[in-house]
Length: 97
Image 1 (cartoon, rainbow, N blue to C red):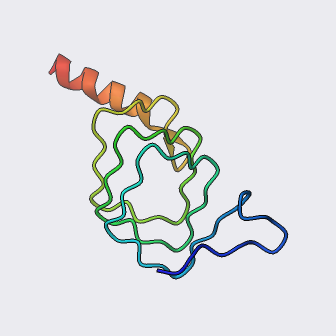
Image 2 (image 1 turned 90 degrees about the horizontal axis):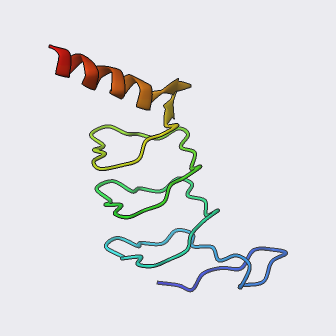
């Protein structure tokens, strides 16, 4: 695996870039990655545990088969719809029925 490449106008301490890398089975633990970007990456079958995704944006993503358990979804929107409100309403409907 080659070393991270340096951005044109930035020092290595400011930005590290991994391009065309095989990082399968790599484990990131206690890493601060706020503001990181992921473009054209395969994260299939990846497990996120105790991850803070507050304010994250997902565009042009394939979420087929994604499972979300034990998560704070306050303010979660999909296609502009408040999903938390929809789930609360569905759970209330199920309890009433």
